[in-house]
Amino acid sequence: MTKLKCVYAVIFFMLGSVGQADDIEEAQPLEDITIKTSSSAAPSKFTYRGYFEIEYARYWNESRDDEAFPNIELSASAQWKPNTSINVFADYMYDYERLTEESTVKVNQIGIRTQLSSDWQIALGKERARKSPGLIISPSDFIFIDESLPGMREQREGMWLGRLSWQTPQQSADVIIIPYFNKDRWGWPDHQNLQDAAALRYFYQTNNFDVGFQGGHISNNLRLGAFAQYFITKVTKIYFDVGYTDKKEVLFFERQHAFDEIFGVTYDGISDVSLRAEIYHNQAGLNQKELDMVLPFLLMQSEEYETSSISNFLLRQWYLIMSLNILNMWHESDFTFSTVNGLDERSHLVLARYKIPLSQAQELGLSVFSLSGSENSSFELRPFDWSLLADWQYSF
Amino acid sequence: MKTIFLILLFSLSVRAEQYEDIVKYIEANLSPPNFASVFEFTNYRLDGTISVNEVKFQSKDIDHMHGTFLKPEREKGREVLRVGDALWTYMPSVGRALRIADRDSFAGGDFSNADVLRADWSAHYSITLAKETKNQWILDLKSKSKESAYSKMRLWVDKSNKQPIQQNFYDSNGTLLKTCIYGSIKKFGSVERPAHLLMQNVLTKQKSELKVLSLKTEQKLEDKRFTVDNLGK
Image (cartoon, rainbow over all chains, first blue to last red):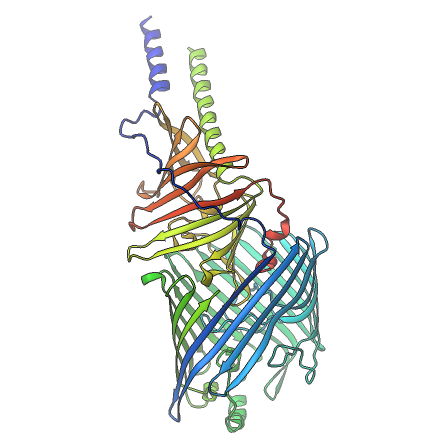
């Protein structure tokens, strides 16, 4: 009997005492409040986005001290989806540059996308769809090649194309025809410089890995590309991005069978901080002897390099690209620091940008841009040593 | 003796299953399949800043979720996509999709991506009863693997309606990281869930609020919404 009593005691103790930690008390819910409702959950037929920006710019080097105000940019993009199968889109940008006193209205994207079935989509027009991992340069993506420095002017220009795609959440495949590869300054096909292109693309992703392949031609030049990115931990990503062309012209030199590749790593293990580093190798880049040959000629040309087109500066073979991004600083401000450094010549591009919101729709930005390089480096072609940019943007 | 022990084990396992069912019920209401919703996130920072983000979510299931920022105007057009463990963001300023780390801070606040985009605790945590009171179950959820967002969670559940009241989040050292308090239980179609959440970060002393402005279930959501190439489209 005593043994039985002990057993019953143990049973009741275990059943009764499981989860009877005395120091845990009941919780209290939040008080009921009235919450405004929103009708935005329903799919919107018409969506838009835009901004107006006004900028002050100053440029210095030993022979130059230029001021430009105002530089103006007005951007508007919209999509109309009358049903789940059709998407009509347009994206325009108006620019006024004070230094040149030129105005441009540029078409970034325009066209129509149609869902043939749940997995099949067709698109006609001008569109942009970039997903390769490189920060600025993506060797594998020979279609959407326009790039900009992080934090600088928006870069949404697409390509004139016809596209047939098969898409699922895990993978996708595209057939792309580009009848007009070159564009004029207004974004329309450049009929003076006709080049066509075509590409096949494939993309596949898993929980911590994704890979993309691209193959095609630009005029008669074969182009191939591949990228892969992998999360070695939840917050550390490595990636590799490579492109190949069978023939490429770099200034006055023709290259055969040229590769360019990027190996990069990102780290997001610190709250609100993102770090990135890349090594970029451009096999088709100029060696010192070739640069020495062309540099005097190029300097005589007095060409103005667009600051938004970084590829104008990357003429050599090896570069180290790094970026630091800090979010949610004082009053939700952000800071971005990016640098591109030549490894086979002494050349540096440094961009620091600080952005602070003034309201739901307004932001103030401050950028400092520095270009430097030794004598006989490709950065001798730089239009300025220092640039200071201050901008105010109103979004709608 | 053997019979007694078998009865004991059976009783304990039935209870464990009961607690798992409670958590699954909560998950099914917090993340029902095929829903479309609008959430408002309000972040209260120590420097006095109050930022408000309004995000439209569409979710086919816990592995397929898409969000579009509606407000503030300067964030308009930004999108986030989850496919399994893969997280992508779309930046309208450069027209590109970027694969990002699945880490803390959704929309710059104290709700993490895991908190907002995926309530699948029963799959990743083992559930036991810490305490049962007259009105509440207090459940302990312990991570089954290092991949889980938190090492441990404690969940207070109202017995009358099986709705969550409070949730504590702990790291591997048992340090309390965040506390989420729920309120304003509302019916949205076929689900009933808290429409108001307050997440308090114990370490930083900051807090964020989530309000459900609308939620519709049984939506016909096509796969194309959850493809990387359709971000921004």
